[in-house]
Image (cartoon, rainbow, N blue to C red):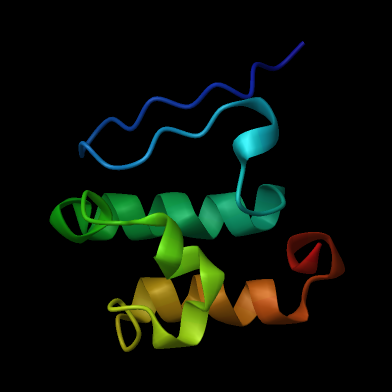
Length: 79
């Protein structure tokens, strides 16, 4: 069985475990790409950044925008 526990490798940002995942597997892959491309920015992620993805301080960053675009159109991420 695959563990959902996630330990960021390149940053000190959020750690997602079990039901705390903010997105579906595709969305999580996009969020990991954001982490890999911008570990310093990822380290500053806060809960409010996920409350309204488009007004996040990260809006305009290519990898974050890909994540938010996916979340806006994915039924699993909208829940």
